[in-house]
Length: 358
Image (cartoon, rainbow, N blue to C red; front, side, top):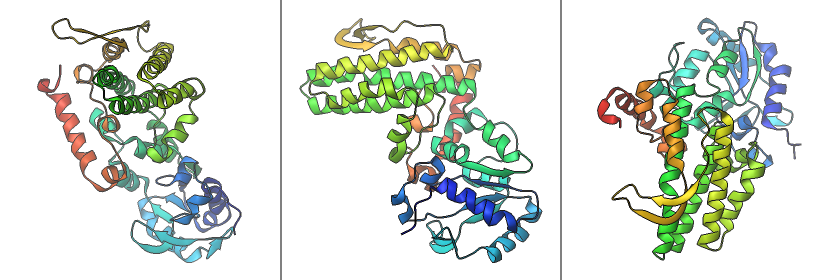
């Protein structure tokens, strides 16, 4: 049995000891794209499918064919005890995984980015975080022109207005959900109350990612990635208490404790005027109705974020959220459907139409 080498390290050694010697032109070399090893989460279990030494090599268009030929003919059968040619789920064949292409073609095929122009708001909103993470995580082992490094820096996080709108949307999603814990419990639906609390835990964890300017990964690694956030040591145990609570009152108190922490973290960002977190009875907003469910004043944070947005079209956009807030953006949706492109068009329509604004 081979001694396990994490995929990032294996790919770095593979480039340095083998692949770099086959390339005689300016290029960039990296491990990016799909795979738990790109995120640094791979374990021995990960090696049971589509795993091994692999790389992306970016060259000029004129060099793609020649470099591909040299790589195809020059690779060994194995490296560090791992086969160099292994199963590719993309095309169902056994092949090596040194992908030679241009950066332009990779960006177009993987992120729907065409050309050097800055991304439009609708592009940012319809780009799944997992795709952005797959490009900005991993590692660059060589970059003669610096083009790959610069593009990774450009996509490292959302522009300020996009980020503020996503924060507003996340506060909106939290604020809409929180009163339902008390209402379902009052109706005798204790399972439903617990389910809503679990949904809130997920949304509060997402808020931590947003506040720390960190893309969140797909569900398999969501909790692992959260545990590495600065918020995790303080917020995490409170969230654990929500999930473990045996009664509605304890659960509700823990939810408010966690939300106060998130509100304090929001204030520490300095992106809006400071807002004191307050817990009070739920204001329904219709006929002056007030219900005895203690909730955070989340709506104040929504409006503060929207007021801080410089782009008027973004500021008036209803805070429904970007693709990962709006949908359950799993692998099937983001990789095998046209929904991201269709959402791009939908966001553009909303941004350009007063009918889509408040």
